[in-house]
Length: 479
Image (cartoon, rainbow, N blue to C red; front, side, top):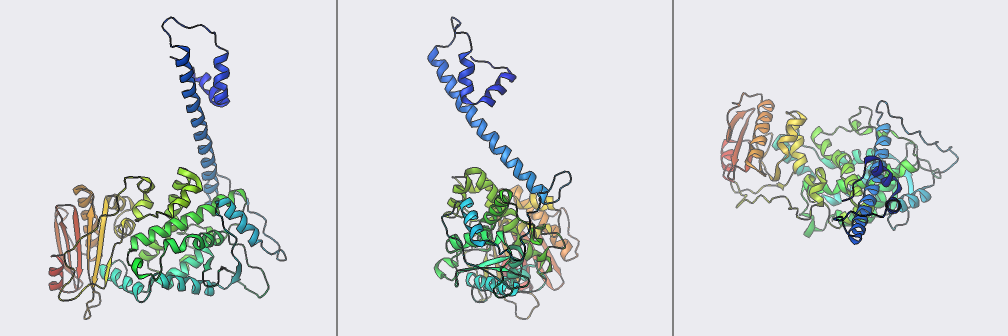
């Protein structure tokens, strides 16, 4: 058996596969009586050469990723890490080269696409175009009904139409939007003027190109036969794919082509970030920012697994749940299972059907729990999420409607962890004292609400009921 000293191994690694052959050629041609045959030695050498080549590739990949992380930390203002120097800002009489940037960025992104015609316009116009696109994804009163359902469940204080607020957040986060009707990329210009160039918006360029390329695949819009299949959980997961892809493309492209930093590059929790000017409920804002924060990490994982070829392939089989975005290994697992469906024999209560029937997903569950628990506690309680279903019913004579939220968990221990965290939420939200030893069922009547927290489905399910009347609460327990 061949044995190498640490110094020799390092030398071989530095020299590569050819160095292995050179080193062996310098060894004496003697062989112990019981040693391996020359053919066996050659096979061992071939195997070791392959291993060395693989390790070299891994070292190179790690070095590149380490460099990128250092650059990223620098842009976030980490102490002890030098920031990237800002690229020189073009003079006012030098129009931005959108065509050149679009071509370079899509070549870098390995997309066979032409650049998009680009024009600068007001922030209000960009918001209008985004809102128009969002309305096609959630037509009619679908979005306001979602706001009503979240209010009934207690996650937001009062009903709102989320789409205008989301449009305002997206306009500030991306800095532009691709308008499919005019086939134009519209970027925000603080002082738009006819005939004058618009500012550079690299994230808007990347996002716009990807939206033009994959938008119709990810977001079916008003096509009724497929539109109803997109739950809140799945919609956010798909948004995370395209937003993370655009963010990663902009980031990696910016390393090779330094781009001036804009206010939109600040961390989302920075008080000076433009999105914090939008009066959006915290719960909805967390859902809106998930595609950019966790989507970036998700795209990094896909890129590490197979460069942009893996990224492109993801659009043909997009993630079905935020759980796959949070844990990319689930998405890449060939044996993965979709979220468990929550079957209910009949959703009719008191001769009425729910106006909202949806899956919120693991991240929405985590955000709800984190409102009244620490981030660590909420993360542990949401980790075993397997599936959920939210039903909301109208309560015309009450300030808030009726809601029932059935969750499913991987193990009984996961269900217990969620039960405890949700019990803490209810205790603090309704300012009520609940027994810390009570597991299996909690009954609470406070602030005009009739609340139930029940373990069901053989210990793998937890049902939360928040109703306006005791009769409706009792009926919901039989779902």
